[in-house]
Length: 331
Length: 273
Image (cartoon, rainbow over all chains, first blue to last red; front, side, top):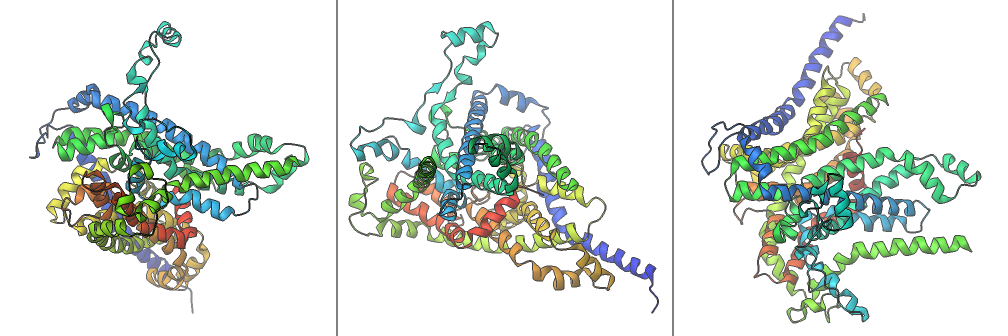
């Protein structure tokens, strides 16, 4: 039988067309529900839709200008920055420490790992409900010292309206003022204490995930590398510092992106734990967006918030996607 | 002896953290098991005097129809998600075409977006399609927004099936469906398990879509009902705690039984490539 290259080519081409046809439904769905809807939201964001009835009258960027000047949104941005820094920082430190300890040939490693990771399987709503009671001012963690005969704590946790900031009349405040950074000594740039409670709950839920990522990263480092360093007399701490950590940089980057983009859109946890908090101390853009859109019918304002959130997440994620796809292509 | 002491320190830290992570579960359990007379906040940490399931019963009575809603939503959505993800992953690894990498990139972006940025059009569209406020509306939503992650996991999984195997079958005249049915699908079980667990967990735990797409309490999934319960001043906190445990149980059971696959899904979602 003669091999007929052309017929094979024709057949493969038609199969290839079938392949494309197979993913068309998904591509169309994502095209419409992701890209089309983002465009639609952007359109709402530059419209005057402020009641139940849709109104697509073009108003330019005025919704965004109003938003930036709106005190609630300013507070939300401060809160998001604080939350992101503390949450990502805590998860990285705890996740890495637990992974480094578990990597030291520990008995019962599987059990420890499962315990640290199980909160990941639970929804943020459950986490919020539980931690709301654990950090309730007159219960939970505050009364735990009483069980061993110590006085109870009196933290307000998520009900604490206090904002920690650099005082303008302190020495640091003076120095900032002299450096032309006086605005930093303003409560608008402080740390809302109530937010720390949300950080604790979120870290409880997500740090195990970082631990798993780091542990996988540590296990991927060839043993010879570390053994060689040990032979040369390096201590475990030195090995961690000079060999493991540099090699784990891609893991750290992935973790920062995943946690960071999550914290920029955090919603469920705040919703079930503290809502806006005292003086908007735990308010976040996603909560503002939800309330103003679906409870206040300020659709254009809600859309504007969502577009700002999208831009923030995209600044973080798009370079990362490029980076990881390029890395994959090189492999 | 220094080495011994470092071992003691390691285990001390590990055990302390384990206790810290388990603390909420302890409180959930002892609170749920207390009788109504015992559930004063000052006694949150005390063990119950006996085993009473009153809180669980009351929480279950309040949540049972919502738990049923969650199952009715999560099962069809997970099944369809798996099928779509598998087909997409198959095409994007074994039938690559010009532009397929860019297409994949565009799909991937969809899993990172804050869903707030599609929420208003989504609600309007579901209203137009007359599925707004129904579980079917939620199923459609979860299937569509699940496409990126399910495609990603299957694509990474199928990348490990040797392409030569598929190429050889192509030359032997097997069709795209034949290759899928006889070569790819039979090797796919672990991939399906990972994706099914991932989708089951994230759809069950979803709150944002559930609260915006369903407004009728009889239709709402368990996460929304639990949040409403926690926000109400009438429901006692012990019932809230019992409700939280009940709402978390399905995903916790999946985690305990199939934890290995759960971790694999996590890693696929975390470290692409």
